[in-house]
Amino acid sequence: MGVKIWLPFPVLLLAIPYPVLLPVAAAFTPSLDSDFTFTLPAGQKECFYQPMPLKASLEIEYQVLDGAGLDIDFHLASPQGRTLVFEQRKSDGVHTIETEDGDYMFCFDNTFSTISEKVIFFELILDNMGEQVQEQEDWKKYITGTDMLDMKLEDILESINSIKARLSKSGHIQTLLRAFEARDRNIQESNFDRVNFWSMVNLVVMVVVSAIQVYMLKSLFEDKRKSRT
Image 1 (cartoon, rainbow, N blue to C red):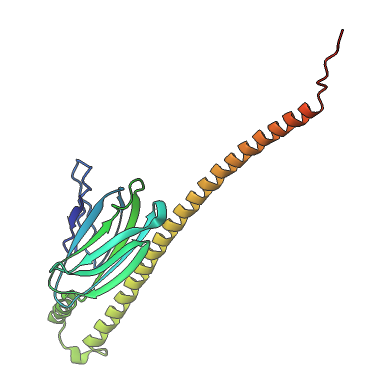
Image 2: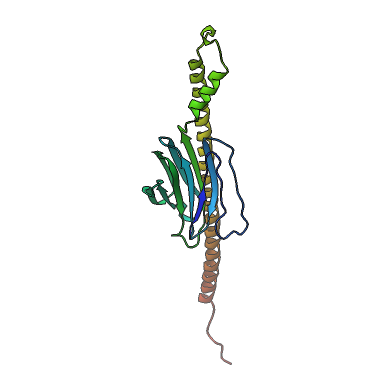
């Protein structure tokens, strides 16, 4: 049975999967961009809920960092329960939607796997949450005599918002690069273990074959005639 986790904006709260008895919560610092990495055991499904206002933007990006096949089933549903995205056996994905008022649900399903657990990374990017207008109004309350300034308040706000957007984009790219690096490292370590294992198997086979060949050659040159007295 799947685990359902509610993500109240702007703090993401995580509930521990079903087999774990101790309740533990992990929280992110208040931000419009949040990311998380968790382990999904084999045969289990885990769901998250994110409250969203009307006409905002919700972007979800996920990657499978480790686990056999590097694949997972992904499901995104609207507050009314309507399926927006459904993907099967995917290693990564990016989805952006314009939201309605309510709780959006997105689930990661590993029930098709009976042995391998999956390490999953996902990131939420929330835009147009209605806070930017309020921040601008707060600025205007503390500034008087804007006609005497060389630069208008709107120009200052535009420059600040541009810098904020670029910094947010840089952080987003760095987070994705770290996720790609983690997945590539896991793949390399898995390949390294496989190469070592099959190298040992080949070595054992070569030793056994060499011993058999030596024995057979030696048996060909043995004098099997019996001497009579």
